[in-house]
Length: 170
Image 1: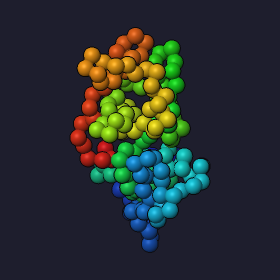
Image 2: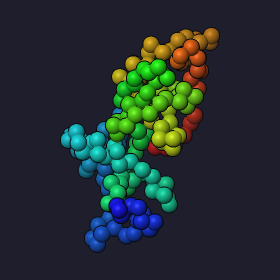
Image 3: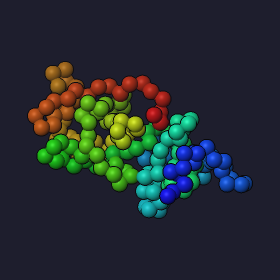
C-alpha cells in the first residue's frame, strides 16, 4: 500500500525541515524547469508529467508519486497532446505523460492564438496541442460555411468553439 492511499495523506505535514512548495514550473510549451533550469533528463520529464494531480483540498497543482508530493507552478495547461493517431473509432490523443485517450471532438476548442485545446483525464484537466500534434490533425480539418475550421471525423463534422476566457492552468 502506498502512503497516498491513506485518507489523510494529503493533509500530513511535510517531512521535518522540508516544504511542500517547489520551484518546479511547467511552462506554456510543456517544458519542466527546476530552479529556472530546464529539466533535461527524459525519464524525469516523463515522470513529472505522469505525477500531475490536483490537491484534493485546495485544488492546486501537485506532483505526486504516491510516496510524497509537492506543489508546482503551471503557466498554462497541465497536459499536452504530443501526437494523434487515427483509428477506426476516431482519433486517439498521445499525451506527454505517456498515456493515450480518445479525443472528445465536442471538447476541442481553438484559442485566440489559433492553438487547439481540449480536456483530458475524464474532463478534469485542460490540455494544449503541441505544434506537431496540431499539424497532424490537419487532414481532419475542413473549412466550414463561415470560413472557420471544422473537424471532420468518420463523416461527422464538429465546429471548433472558441476557447472560453479562463485563468491559465485550469
